Picture 1 (tube, rainbow, N blue to C red):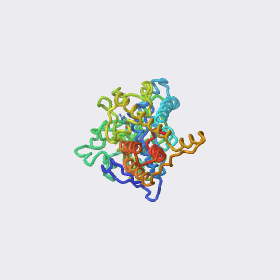
Picture 2 (cartoon, rainbow, N blue to C red; picture 1 turned 45 degrees about the vertical axis):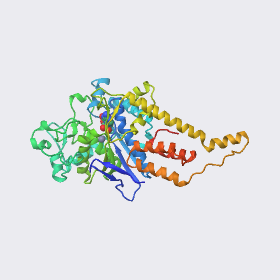
Picture 3 (cartoon, helix red, strand yellow; picture 1 turned 180 degrees about the vertical axis):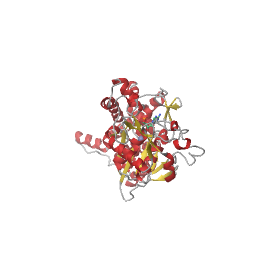
Length: 439
Ligand code: AMP
Ligand code: ZN
């Protein structure tokens, strides 16, 4: 089965082959949530997409190692902890605060049939010594420096001298006409201490943020870096390193908004540290919109799975509507679209129910209990028919085109040249990828 992925890095559809060409193992890294609040259904679109990618790779015969970070230390988790536990909060309170949202996130994954047992989760606060070591190694290689404000920054200019590919993930002309790095302006104010910033601020960014009064007692000590905590971007570089070593990672995903600065900076940090390409295929699902704007906490235009359940919808119906559109397109969420999706999903399920009832299994059972043999000859259908439908699905899902995969499923349901038993086998197989709990 061929897999064809659109790679953000090359801006092309490429046939997938693992980094270790002889191997059937694939390393998949998915940027996980910041556990400072409940995930909204826009966030969850990114994880449903990752789950489809994971399942598709498995369907194609790969053994996938899926790793996801849980960002439990950043500006937002610190603020949330102090709001809840007070101004003396330390790492223990931070862990308690973020654990609640970690569990809520896990429950959301369960509801969407994203199987947690397939994912290795790594919390940032559990790899602080590895983060510190990685940063010190970047300093030793000349790619990072401790500034007067006590924080340690990544030097984009130094990186450019050696790699000359900063911002490649966003576009060939990304740096055109832009000044880069704190060095270019000579101004320390130009450095980025915040985790999130825009494309107009391509400045040296913080790897280790010196302890500040607003951090309360949430910090870790280090003899070279000093008291402080990691920046957001370094977390993912280090978790990749912890999970996969310095090998080029096969696939890395996260919502489109992460391409800059997060993934761009991850790539710079990791390539500087590992001296090899960081990731082979970058996959970026588009956003979920609401009223034609990106669903986000800051716009306060978001819904959670709890809202969906309160309106008596099955969360799997939400998964179903996501699969109906291409992950490369924004989707506008409305309650009407969910309602239509829920109807479509129920319809699909009842067709499958009828099919189950009509299979030979039930017929022979009935025949047995009624004491007679079934008079009609068993239905037969050539194996080629079965293979034709399977191939059709594989071709469509091989490019992660779930909408076409669903059409292929409908094709099986209405097929005249398949037996009910064959249909059920195909539905079961397709559902290994779709994850819609069809049987
Ligand atoms: P965060 O918890 O903010 O780090 O975001 C977790 C994931 O959700 C990231 O991969 C984001 O790119 C993604 N994300 C955020 N907003 C949306 C949205 N409206 N639609 C789809 N994905 C989103
Ligand atoms: Zn990340």
